[in-house]
Image (cartoon, rainbow, N blue to C red; front, side, top):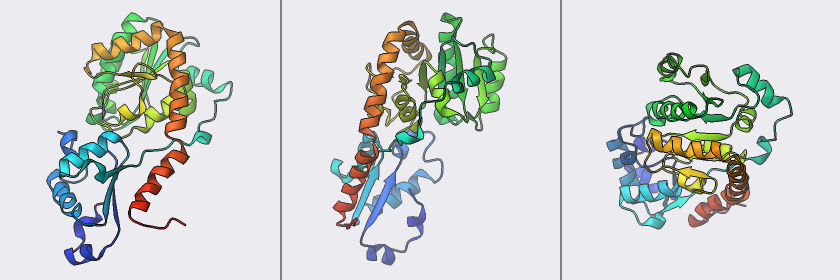
Length: 294
C-alpha cells in the first residue's frame, strides 16, 4: 500500500470521498520479526487504524489469509476487507519449445533424465533459504540421481552460495542466480519448494502450478488459497526440513502422482486465478464504493 496517506492532513482526508487501501501480504504482527520491511509497524497501525474509520474507505488484500489478518489486526468486521486475488496471464506461459528445457539442463550441468527440485525467490531472511537448502539436502541424500536448483538473488545469496559450495552435494545443489527462462525452468522440474516464513499470494506458486508442477510449501499466508493440500501439492504445517523433505520424497517416489497433481494444479490455477475471476473481484470493490466502471 502507498505511504502517501501518512502526509495527508486531517482536513484533506475528511474531504476524500472514495479510498481504496490495498494490502499484498499479512498484517505486520504476522510478519514478525520482519514487519512491513518499508515503514515502522506502529506507524502503519496508527495510519490504517485512523483511515479505517472513514465511511467511504475500503480495504483489499490479495489472499483470504491477508483479508482475515488485517481485519483482526485493525478490529474490523470480517467483511470489511475485500479479496482481490492475483491473476495468471496464460498467454505469458506458452509451453517451451522442444530444445529449451534440454538447453537449460545443459547450461546448469544437469543430466537429461535427472529429477529436479526447483525454487525461485529473493534471498532474504523472510524467504528462509537456509530451510530450503536443508530440506533439499535431505532429499538429495536419498535420491543420488536428483538435483535441486534455487534461482534468485538478494542479500543472502553469497552466504547461501558459500554454504552450498562447501557441501558434498555441491555438484547437485545449484544456486545459479536469477533464472531468465522461467517457463523452461518450471517444465524442467519435478517438484517446487517454497519455504517462506510469510507470503501474501506468492506468484511463484501460481506460476509453478500453472506450469504443471506440484508444490510443497510452508503455510505462509496466501499459499492456502493456491495449493489444494494433498491434491495439487502439500502444505507442511510443521515446517521443518524433515517434514518438507518427506513430501518431496513422496513426489519423487511417485512420479505418476506428481504428474496428476501437476495437471490438477494447472486446471485449478487457470480457473480460480483467471483474468475474468480476478477482474470480477476487483469490480466488486468499486461497486461497493458506487464507482461506475463504464
